[in-house]
Length: 316
Image 1 (cartoon, rainbow, N blue to C red):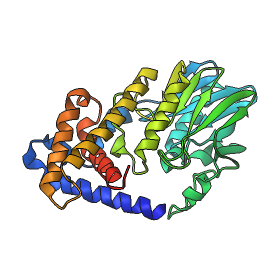
Image 2: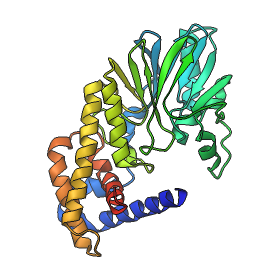
Image 3: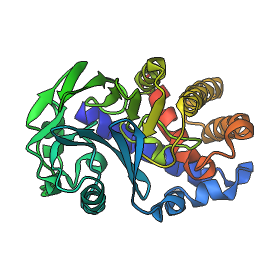
Image 4: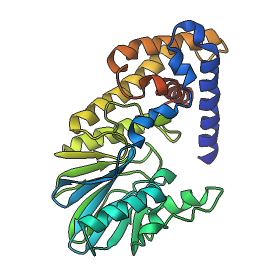
């Protein structure tokens, strides 16, 4: 699996670089190619101040910059779902101290193993850390020691309902999607779904994620939609509703089917760079009218196209 992911990453980078180098004369917006690594994608959200807001009942959302965690207020203490990094955690601790003075964080819960969701966790000193059984193993593969990461002490696998301070939380396992350790969460009594890396409101995901299997990811989105909760909380960028999740799911499926169709019809398996450019242009022309005003459409189109191209090449 690691070799496959490494090969896919190299394939995508090479493909995106080729598109950037070869596509200018085909009329795609110059911004697409000039921003193959677009810092301005994040700028509108980086200035978002720290804010702890009640979602429903005992469920809160803490937002800082372009990241967001879920906080569960239980009679026995607080549970924090995803921690992101040390700066995020420092801001979170200040907000929790104001809202819940003297109340400890009893649980940290990881949605998956990616470093942008697990770092900073050591700063909360939680007695129990919950996550998929493979989270520690994946983090250990990082070549440098992650000093601000708190290891999972209560591993889980598959679908499971975990009771935190008397409140049941459904852990919805999403294998073969965006990492092999991914969970969505449903707090039934509050009817809130936390959808880490599975909900982007009128936005293309940043770089379309290097760890991605599109058929499984679309099934994961379908599963969250089927919960039909009253409230949905994304982990990044803006907030929204169940309909925004439906729209994101449809965009993802449309993009994948469009790229697969265009690249197949243009014989992209061959060595003809012109055929690849025709596929890129055709996909852009089809998708831009409906999704061109989404955040990051131009900035992330080439990386997203490269990811889908790599997926089709590998057979999915």
